[in-house]
Image (cartoon, rainbow, N blue to C red; front, side):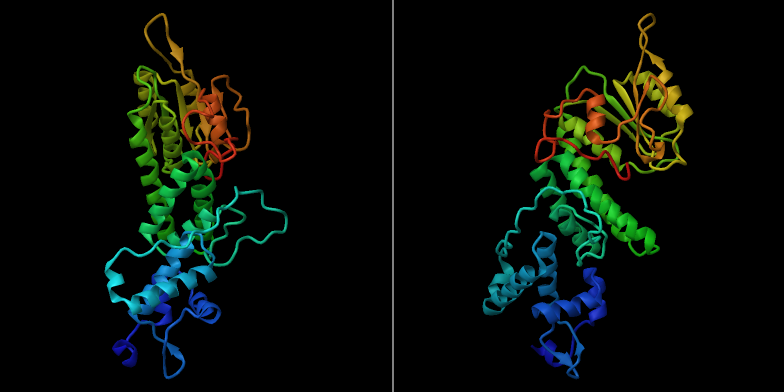
Length: 359
């Protein structure tokens, strides 16, 4: 109360930057849901006290969990009233947030449909509710909420579905907004990518010990000059989750190192990722597909999967050792991995999920 009476507090612009929303959104929440500062200096200018900020942060967390803004505002105000009635509540574990309704699987976006609902500032389209919560948390730079939502998505839907229907749509939306607004959203993209990578690697580390021993691994590598590794990390994690050994070399693997790894490892297959046409190297892919390995008199070759949008739209690469998967289930089928092996199919069991960003 002393803070309010002396006018101490942050401005709407400062609070909007902290929460990752626009000042217009804060004013709209105040007008629609009554979740605003209790007092205004000179009767008009908003000054947000620490209590006001805490209430708005809780509302943002609730919306990240999938609650509609009106319901999230009611829950946040109820929490604030509870703390006012009993200050001891601030030192105890808060009650669980209201449960959001379960979202149906994503469907195709009908012609003429709006690009997105308001609230995230990102063009998400017709996607799972988890995408909207993840986007809101990423825009706020709320690392704890981002990680919690990613972990929940993997545990709920399996890794393949979480990747294709939660992670990829959100990454695409952030990438589109980044491209259209300069570098305004680069920090959002970096935060989201880092936590997605951490989630994928956690699944890999958790599963790698369960992969079948005595079998040659699937070798995963980005082409020279290609730094985008997330799709390969996703495929590698799904493979290990299903018991298939995977060896990931990461981004921008030099041609000599790639050829040497094929000869040393004798992989069951090689997956080469290219995000853009500038890194797609068909002569190198043909060279890898033609590389023979093994003992003299019993040498063999590894099939090569050309993955990623950089290879273009042709489904037939025109070489017997080259394959062109378009989706994650295509790649798994070409690698001889059962759809029902481990977790990772879609909620309806179809397994129709995208392999990577822009593929």
